[in-house]
Length: 69
Image (cartoon, rainbow, N blue to C red; front, top):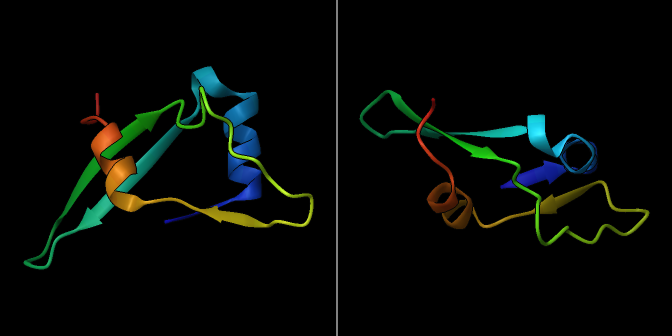
């Protein structure tokens, strides 16, 4: 999963109000949604000044996320 530099910086600057919504599209149709609140807390991803996005492991993000509330 790719997250843009702007999304990461916004998440770091507004951590209490930032929610990353993950949507899994199911092969049989439909989708499942999970929310990851404050996704960049703790270990801030290091961004090189020329980087425009960073890739994250989808499964790890999905497992850390919770059901919508």
